Length: 311
Image (cartoon, rainbow, N blue to C red; front, side, top):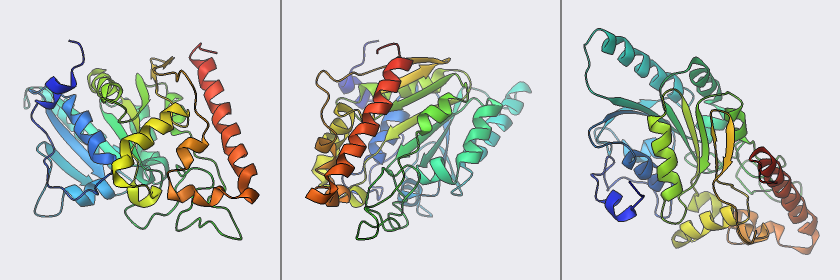
């Protein structure tokens, strides 16, 4: 069936309104779209690492989740969900569970790129039939906007403050999607809540219904950490994609596929300008830093084009 946003929004929500996520946050849009890709008759077991999503959607004794929900520690969401999946398979073999259950782990970049990477890598290598979704907001937002390995170079955070000593974080962002592709798992994709959410929905559906492990890396802007006006959420996402800071692509059984190629690739400054975390870069003495960022974005984009056979 052709993608139709209106039809899909009529499906029953699996995460309720009234949760405490911030206005203008990308994470709830990501979660709702991923869960919407489930077939109505299928059950889900959802594990969430400690972070913004967990503390805002499951304040004891209340929960916004309609499916089975597990709160994991910061570092072990992938291990928890992989254990639930293994138990389900064992019970299904002896006829103790029926129907289809999907296993999904959600984690922010802190609980995925950094603290939870060991558990994530292990779960993918073991081949569990599960989906790991990283909602990437590029810092430890829940605990005070500390830098992570996902934080872009020269971003201002509380642990990499821009000032006279350093101009923000001094390392480039880790390319986790490429690292996960190197695990040789059936499905890996990089996506975002872009335009009418078609790219995110279709990739979530593929991840959920491709047998074996799957990984989704989803850009999820944070108004507090990125310092943009809340109504600008979708515009920030659009600029990330049109500047090729966050390309949309997937890796199916090792084959790289580019899903979107901007007709007129925008300069990276168009993406950086609306975000307060990069405000310090727009001074005469920091022009060279903007050029450095543009050069790295171009390098990664050109490499991706080669991998996708688009060069």
